[in-house]
Length: 151
Image (cartoon, rainbow, N blue to C red; front, side, top):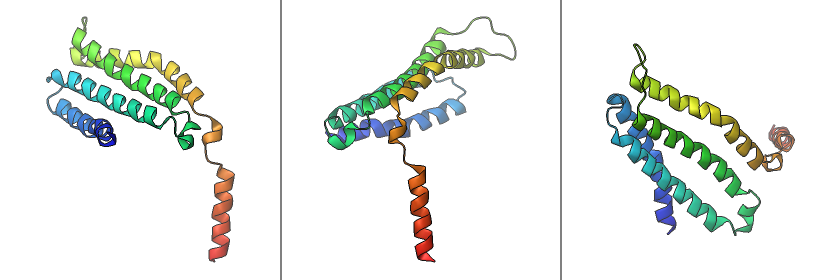
């Protein structure tokens, strides 16, 4: 089961750059790629969610509140991909040179994302606590202690 979940997550890291390259080479004319990328991303998110649910009862993992962190990440990635698919499918009217329909679609997608960034920021800010961060003073002390004993 773990290998299946691993491959669900891993495939997006390989597939997404390949899709981006194909979109660049063909200047976005391969419309089915948006849908394939969305399916790939949703499969990745499902794999991550499965992993988090399996690990949530593990005491060493519970202290990190992974569900909240993942929800913040998942919401931002999901909205960006859905916005891209919807805007590119719906098309954009009212364009003129040099602003092609592709440029206008990208602009509207980015505009939607910019409107939603404050929400994602608040979600991420509330999911991560300063107690989880390493103590820089402790790291500095360890580094100084190591340097004085090696010289």
